[in-house]
Amino acid sequence: MSGIFGVVSKGNCVETLYYGTDYHSHLGTEFGGMAVLGDGFSRHIRDISQSQFKSKLYDDYQNMHGNKGIGVISDLDEQPIYLNSKFGPFSIVTNGIVENTKELADQLLQNGISFSEVSKRVVNVTELIAKLISQSNNIIDGIEKTFRAIKGSCSLLLLNKDGIYAARDKFGYTPLVIGRRKDAWAVTSETCAFPNNEFEIVKHLDPGEIILINDEGIMQRKPGSRDVDQICAFLWIYTGFPASSYEGINTEVVREQCGRYLAKRDKDINVDVVSGVPDSGIAHGLGYAMESGKPFRRPVVKYTPGYGRSYIPPSQEKRDLIAKMKLIPIKEVINGNSIVVCEDSIVRGTQLKNFTIKKLWDCGAKEIHIRPACPPLMFPCKFNLSTRSINELAARRAIRDLEGHDLENVSEYIDYKSEKYKAMVNWIAKDLGVTTLRYQTIDDMVKAIGRSKDRLCLYCWTGKCPKSTTRKPTIKIVETKKRPAKKAKAKRRVTL
Image 1 (cartoon, rainbow, N blue to C red):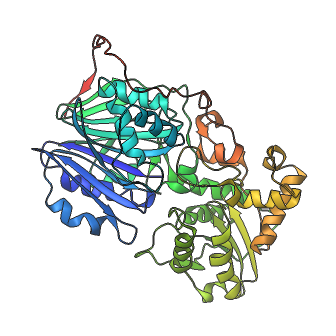
Image 2: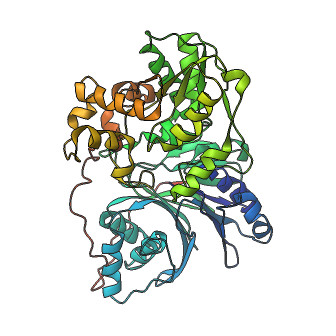
Image 3: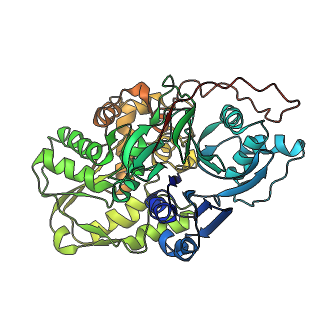
């Protein structure tokens, strides 16, 4: 997952852009970039895989000037992309994943469109989105057609002479939020970028909505729809920052609620210490401690400087190195104690097993009880860059071993009341080498979030796509002839 941020101000916007973008550093580890429009475009992209966004972009931001700009922390592709199109030059940043990248790229190549950016995939997805948009007669039409063409998800910010076009993913999987202060408007993936930059939330974009932000204020260019309102539930469980809210629901509070629900199902164990795997597991552990009455302590602590999330980097080798080095055990807290360890999730299970559980046993833990805050992950994410392969999921490895082969239908293993589910959990517990393992149920997770099931994307647990995502996409983007311009509708504008 990537994080995107944009700002339009009465004066120079660059300092706000720099710090606002940096507040998305928990969402990506590969590239950071900013594009600013003043007298002309200025753009900088830096590799942040070995250094933080702030340090890599500091000198760049000192030399940029303009009243509107966009920034990104990217999980894979280099961004922002700059393109000179038939409706003028623009820069663009995106957040999401396009499953049919090759299919769409081939369509453009056949129509004589070339690609200049090299990616770890076939093409740079943000460049692909930019090229798709540029095939239409105007930006709004281009964004609409692009959203209809892609499989997966995409939210974007597009910067040009008009201002910043903010367009939210048509299924509402990824969030975009508008903020306001006395001298500026901003748009962000993460609301944690607002408080210290003195912005107040004024609007959560609807799925598929397109907003234009410029010197005169904000204007809706295309209404969205709540018919397919299914935001990613994993934002609250793991991906999002504790200070961020999505659809008005705070992440830290949801994680505390998750911990409380875990504790309510744990009446049959007696422990000395409750803990959470840093950082995202801490609030889950705090909720568990509040509900159970057991003391919250820190048997392992994260060495924050220089180590980001071990979940995000694309290579297993790099993920393992970060997981090993960032968590330091405290033997004086661990030795002789029975410990509940709250974790946001178990994806592969290798890091939890090799770099958390092993450290606890080595330091003399008496018992280790693992409590993930979400159900077993069963399917790779189709809408963002998270789990990459079905074969790497711990639950799927368990099923394969229990059945002797891969299963297409895993519905019995999804039902937490079934015997097959219990056998799968026992297999994972044995593989991890822990005293007990008990997952959160889907119903309890949904209650902790506070939205109905039909307003959440639960695909990675249930394998069920949001409504309408299974229809065949329209991939013919290139216009063969000009169409008459549509009569402009009156638009509502809010001013600074």
